[in-house]
Image (cartoon, rainbow, N blue to C red; front, side, top):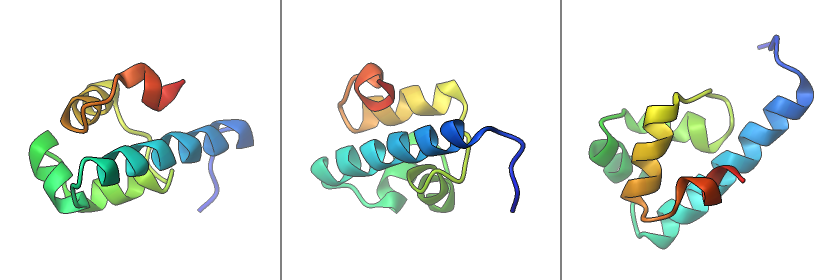
Length: 76
């Protein structure tokens, strides 16, 4: 599916998603468990981790808290 966002934005989303996935795995959480903790569907977590979703800030803050990582570390 084509995107109206520049390539660098899409690549950045993939990097952030990979950091979220790494932090989730370090926290020993499945995508389903993380979804329950943050009030999101596990499919949403999957899309965020693969960079195909553009999550809202509030959800990113909740994810950072759930995996016990500062938000800045996920998005730096």
